[in-house]
Each structure stands twice: as structure tokens, then as C-alpha cells.
Length: 445
Ligand code: CAA
Image (cartoon, rainbow, N blue to C red; front, side, top):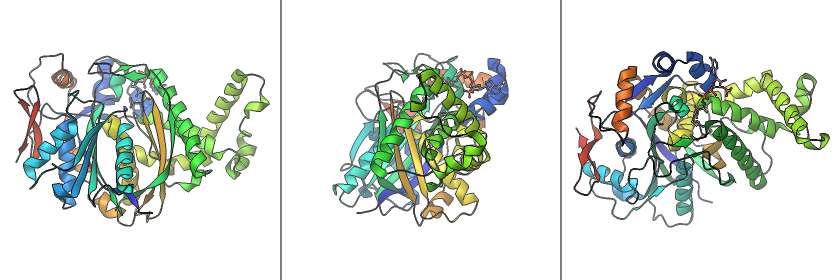
């Protein structure tokens, strides 16, 4: 079977930075530890006034195509995943293709373009579409460009405001990929849920506490479904576990449940028995409440074992490094987690070729998807080419008053005129409105 996967990745972060413990917490009357320890977040990335989902996506794609020496003719498909779209009909991919045509010779007139919507899981769904298109042999030797781009802003004073972020991830899906190969097997956990939605509104309506439980429930179902098709998996089968990361504290909750699930009936459960007992089994309990209580006690104890802490530090923690400094990027978030983990392996000088990743994507509404990726021969070259550290370092530091202004500048209901904070350099920028209400863009040299 042809190997299909992610050939290259580029990340573009919003160019402003909001410090959460130092700037946001005091203004909100919160303890800084709520952010650094509870949510696991230090900062959010924000879009400058000339940035939006199109500029960030086009800038990531531009860098990717330039670095890989690609022309528009090499791309047969452009799919954009976003939950921040501003047009109910014309897909964001057409705006991004229009941007790219300003700087590349040729055009994308024969590329199939679309926009994928299922909250944060849509980026992974777009990869899935590209994978199927290539596997079906309909790609005519061309690759697919998948762009996950979001301005993940919440209404002011919504609890979600703590987890905001903005950025884009561009990914090239191709045969014989340089970075990771995708498994054919995948598992789903999907149900009609009302936890996070935007019915004809810019900022989400969120039932925050419920959304956390829905994430955990759907992820568990997806894991069980994955095992149904791929067979039993073992905790040590995977070098990294990149999960959808709305905030690192969410992944901390998910990881221990996943570990508990995949270590049941294994030698790890046997080895831990003397220390914390065996996992409670439903059939041993007369009522659900007693079972849930015992399960919760076991999970707390499991989290405190050296065995678990070592697994978490090696498999999960490295995937959270970037997220801690950028916040939630919705559709891009799980793809940032993958990059973060691989970047950490590169920094540690690991020979990771052939190692496997257990990737858990999630979108509210709600659906989780689990698949496996295998690290390819040229992965290091791809990871070394990223300039995410320089981008993060170069962000403009917002004061709280400036944060309030820039939030207003991006709020459709506010008529705020706010000066840009940074100077655009060799990038696409928002350039005002066209005669039919469309957003216009230009490349600034
Ligand atoms: N020191 C240490 N920890 C502290 C602390 C302190 N001084 N103060 C608070 N904390 C801890 C809390 O104990 C809590 O941790 P636990 O959940 O482990 O107990 C954590 O910090 C957050 O504190 P609160 O629960 O009090 O925070 P909150 O009620 O203000 O909001 C939230 C938390 C519900 C997640 C909110 O940020 C939110 O609504 N976020 C948006 C929704 C979201 O991201 N949901 C995630 C699942 S859905 C999804 O993944 C899709 C998506 O991308 C949106």
C-alpha cells in the first residue's frame, strides 16, 4: 500500500502576546497559579489588527510552499479547517489561494478547494479527506494543502477568555511523506452534544465544565473504537501522544484516563497492584455511584505513581510546550501538539525514525478521532526548518488596555479603530473591504 502522510508543516502565530499570569490574571482578580498550574498556560497569541484567519493561513502556506520548492501546479487540493470563518458561502481556501496567487507564478484553477467544519477536529478531518483522495488515486501526482487556521477569541468575561489564542498550521499531505506516515486505522467517538457552539454569532456559547467531560467521554469512545480496528494497544507502544490541547490542563486530565484504559489487564496493572491495588471492575460493584467513586480514587492514586509520572513526562509533556505559550488555536491545536513533541525529540537529539505517535483529535459538538502516525526518515530536516521559536520571541507584548483594544478591533459588533502594534514584513495583510463586502488582502514586501 502507498505510504501517505504529512510531508511538511509550517506554523504561523498571531503576532501579539498576552501574558496570562502577569497581565491577565491581576486584571481579572485571579491568582496567577490558576493559569500556570491549573490551566497550564503562560501566554496567548493574538492577531494584530491586520491579521486574520486568511493572512495567518496564507503566511503559513506561503512559507511551506517556498521551503518545499512547490508551484501552484503541484497542489491538487486546498482544504481549510476553521471555526472562525467570516463568509457563509465562499470558502476561506479561495481567499487563501487568491493570496498565494499574488506571489507564485501560475494559479490554483485546477485545485479542488473547500472548507471543513467540525469545531477543532476539522483539521484532522481535512487530512483524512486528503489521505482518501490520494489513496483513491484521484490526485494526479499532486499533493494536498491542508490549513487549520483560527482566531480563538471568546466574549469578554467569558471563562473561556483565559484559553484564547490565534494562529495557523499549514500541512502538505503527500505520498512518501518526509515527516509522518498516517495509519489506515482510525477510531471515532461521536455524539450530538451541546457543549460549545456558535449559532450565527462570532464568539462561542460555552458550557465550559460540561465541555471538559464531553471531551473525555468522546476521547474514550474513540480509543475503544481504535482498538476495535487496530487491536489492543500498549502504553509503551508510543513515543508521543499529541492530543487536542485547548489548554494543557485538559490534556493532563485526558492522559491519565487514557493510561488507565490502556494499562488495564496488562503487566503494568500487575506491577502497580502492590502500590495502588487493581483497577476497579464494574461487575464488582452493586451500584454505579460506588464504582465511579472507586474508579476516581484509583485514578488519583495512579497519577501519583512514578510509573505514570515517567510515562507522562516522556509521552505527553513534550507535546504541550508550545501550547503553554500560545493558548488554544482550535483546529490547529492538535497539530501544534504534534510539532511541539517532535521538536522536543529533535532538541534532545533522539533518533526517532520509526517511532509512533498516538494522535487524539477532538471537536466540540462533539467528535474525537484517534489514529497513529509513524515518524519518517527525513523528519529531523522538517522539524529543524521550523522558525516557531523566533516567531514566538518576536511577538509584541500587550498591556491589559491594549488587549482590550485589540479584542474590540476583532469584534464585529464594535466599531473600534485601533492602530497596528507591529510592522508587517514580507507577509499577507488584511487590506480593507471590496465592493461586495469581501475582505481584501495584499502582500507587503
Ligand atoms: N492555584 C492552582 N490551581 C488553580 C488555582 C490556583 N490558585 N485556581 C484555580 N486553579 C485550577 C482549578 O482547580 C482548575 O483545575 P482543575 O479543573 O484540575 O480542578 C483550573 O485551575 C481552572 O480553574 P477553574 O475551573 O476555576 O476555571 P474556570 O471555571 O474559570 O474555567 C474552563 C475553566 C471551564 C476550562 C474555561 O476556561 C472554559 O470555559 N474554557 C473554554 C472551553 C474549553 O476549553 N473546554 C475544553 C474542552 S472542549 C474543547 O477542547 C474544544 C475547544 O477547543 C474549545
